[in-house]
Image (cartoon, rainbow, N blue to C red; front, side, top):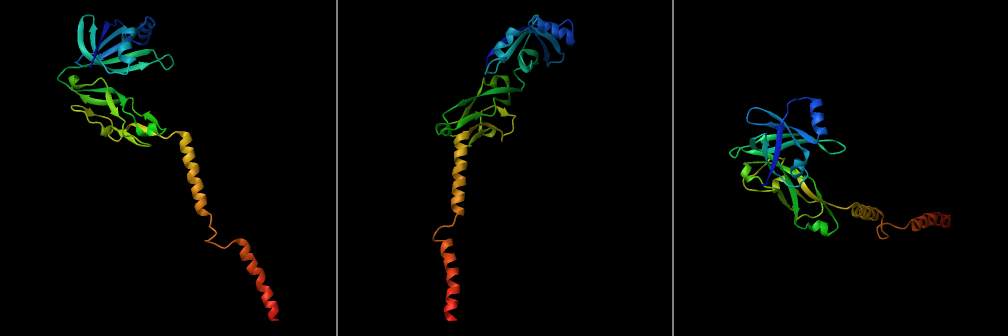
Length: 226
């Protein structure tokens, strides 16, 4: 997995006002967890481009005023409108301890259902996995080459050595859905078939006109007898 360097500076003041001043100067308030003491620092927002606005997972080499360590971006908070990073949490890691990370998924293979007019929908943009840092992949390939209509790839279908998947094994990662127009056409065809089956055939029941004629003939036969 690739590593991105983040240079940080220790925060002299904490609190909402100080954090807002840091943001206005083009920086991101951050906290480093793990290894005992929490470290509060800030870093230029431009340095987060390669670890946040990407479809790959990365390790982070933190350099906080000369104190260096390996870490991962554990969580990032964004502004609901501008999507600017408001806060970032980092977790210190070591090579001999397993960690949990969200690894992006990547769809590979041509799904037969898509060739028939279906739509491949990715249900999970990433999967949470546990492994040693050296075994963490940049992304997880999801093979969709056997997906037909309404078929899906589930977490339990993915097998990668030395990776433990934390998400429920029955969770869908990708599914081929039928387009709305095709679904409505299928429903109309089913409805028409049902109505046709409910209508009696000519051989199955006498016509209504024939039944009425027989009822009209009965009184005439009685009158002749008189």
